[in-house]
Length: 412
Image (cartoon, rainbow, N blue to C red; front, side, top):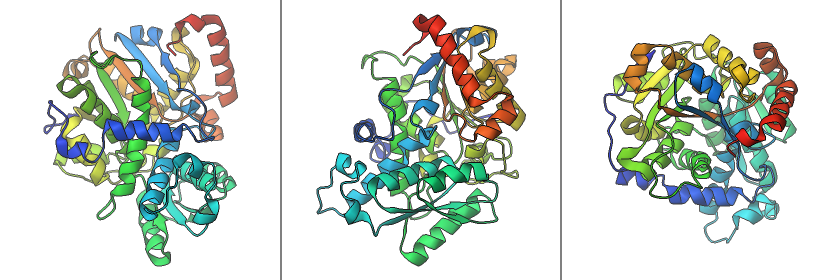
């Protein structure tokens, strides 16, 4: 299902939005993150898939591979530490805590009584637990009923205290807020709600480091190298972080933005239909665990409503098919390790490319240059193997073999 956004506009980046998120803050966040030992050094790769592009009748498919960002295996590792660093700066304004010293744990004694808490489907909680461990504060993570033990174990291994509830993700967000209010803890969430926007803003600003890295070698006056950017939905945080950067940089010449969600977790799609932050109409539970969110982040919606051209949904089956396509390196492309939520962008592209009407509606022609962000790898290895029929190590081995044969075709 695809819906055009009736409120979208083109033009210069809104001044009011610039006060909330901007390129300068994204670049500062990226500089701070460069000091964190949890992150792998250097940029994450951008894989080019020319054979798949030819098959789908588009000019170019580029996949930014966030599974390589850190051993944690997802883009979420860019948001939680930035939010935690900025929280500490606000809480102790008279202290000259340097980000590099905080990340190295040099102020752990000062932070030992700070307790941060968040709900998660897995990846954000893992990132927050890792950041809290590095800085030396306590971390509590609220998990809902659909979060598997396989996703829980690495969070607990980082020292986080686990709280289990019987509801869904949105219930876990409410429980985290309740516990924080009752115990004097600090919520560090990637979704906003009434009276809670600063920290989600910081998380989203951390995600913008992806596109700052991606465009680092592009000349300031050059046009955007992509005509279409397809972004995963969830509560909207990733999409808002990426959209804000590209809109500020390119203004009216920005690419076409398309946001994709699971059919049963369509809160952004419904927001576009109703013209305001809305809730999902389905069960929310999805194989795309990181996108199984029922309520739109109001702060993220402030950026998505004026900038995203189309909102769409895909089925769990389509996401799994996209995972398999990436893993297999169909028709000779490099194999890519992409998890259930990571492959949602390709699932959307395959749906659009397979329909002449949707191709025309979205301007997806033979010269389209499409950017996808594979937001995660096999963060639940057993689930990945079950869905794709391949183990994560086997896909990475096939990728290494491909690279040895075709190193000259790699973009980064």
